[in-house]
Image (tube, rainbow, N blue to C red; front, side, top):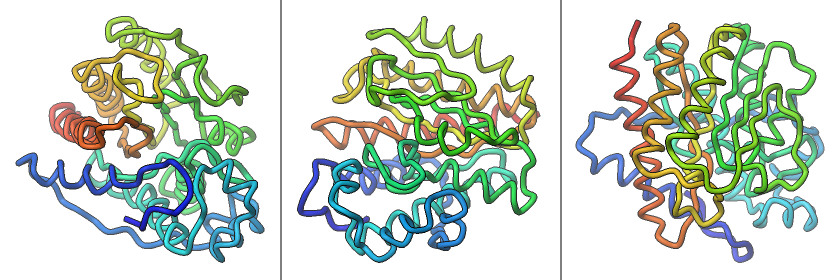
Amino acid sequence: MAPRPERGTFRFDKYFLVMEALRQSGSPITEYAPEPMPREWLAAVHDPDYVDEVFEARVPREKERRIGFPVTPQIASRVRHTNGGTYLAALLAKQHGYAANSAAGSHHALYETGAGYCVFNDLAVASNRLIDEGHASRVLIVDLDVHQGDGTASLTATRSDITTFSMHSEKNFPVRKARSDHDIGLPDGIGDDDYLETLQKALLPLIEEVAPDLILYQAGVDPHVDDKLGRLSLSDAGLVARDRLVVAAARGSGIPVASALGGGYGNDQRAVAQRHAASMLAMADENQASRP
């Protein structure tokens, strides 16, 4: 956790509430604390000058407006740790089949600026590092946040070893979409049955085609019908079915899955946190059930 900045509308308290919900769930969980991501790992994907702006808490005001909050020293430290969390979750997933980062999923961050509440793009950075270190030769990024993963698509556009798949609300932010390797823009108000049918038809053949060594999963809960910034209509049960589908499809082929928290917005932060916690617990349970 970092102190809430004096400017901006983003509410950071959901992250503590997610951990609180997980700890109170009664389910067996093991917690890990990630190391802060080194500058050179971030600068391998982002503009090194922008990385320095974040590290030194001197991000220009126009970039802070795109991000949605000022980048204080505490925020700079936080995003280094949350990016390290996605990398660590991937390594743990290779050991256990599934692991979750209880933060991050910062899929709007671009090469030389952050955007949409995202400072650094942990999905792109972790993928690059995992491949560089030989932990994977092909990574598939599955993004089921309600918003398109435009930053991830842009940062990995020239990579043949990183494949991006985004299924999102077509009319939602960002207005200008990037081009993922595979995009599905959904109409407003789509519910559980149509959503799950569309996902299953697209995801299973894609996994077979790409044959990745690892899946990084952007598991935003903002497709929920009650989400403040969503335009879709998934129920609690629909979100759980979505997450089980992703893990079952991956684990059935022996592919590990590391999830990042992604979006989820509402006036009742505890309700949002409960959706995130239910998502992670469902994926962990499916990982046990789907072991090849």
